[in-house]
Image (cartoon, rainbow, N blue to C red):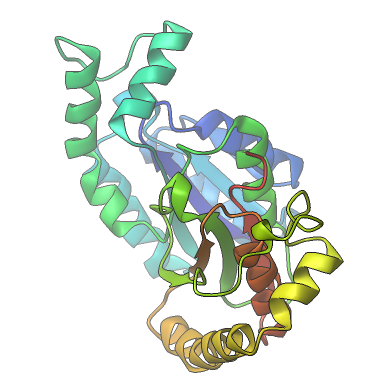
Length: 279
């Protein structure tokens, strides 16, 4: 049975980009399908059709009541399970900037753009609260968001839970869409070594320098050991996605090397996303 994902979120948060990324992965993607037809189309997921997943983009233009979406999700889960909600989000100021730059009209009726975004956020709060995966697109351009989707939704045999390990820099703000956050700023910083400064944690000299620290080995071992018993517990509670973030000052050296090593040591397949490397 193919996985079914309902893609929703704030207007302007990136639904079109996500749709294109899932199509590139071979998913069957339908945009703005009336909720009355979702159950029929979802039968494709269990009917022997050769798609890795079915993505239904809902709520575009504010045409679907959030309660109706949740009702359909409950019905689908009762019938066949494996139905997830992906919610795309971004802070109000980012959405305002996007709409002003594109000169598009916000679909939510309100006297001003700020009021429209605020009103939509209240209306879709129940969907965000019910989402299996929330992605904050405020710090990603379309290419980075596409890469994130491809990493998170690429088919992996036998993966009961999708685990994403994210590196970031505290100087650029904490990620808003992760489940667990760890701080590695206590480790010696390669930034202060002239020959390492222009490199990143993906380069062997930096990774070797960071991972040679006893404190780094303690941190990584503790995180991997904790996830070793937490992941099965999360899975038993029905959680399908878990995102683990590791931060340093700028998100280029220590957190990148540590995130890569955590993903390598986990007993489950994990994707790695380095949020601040493109900066």
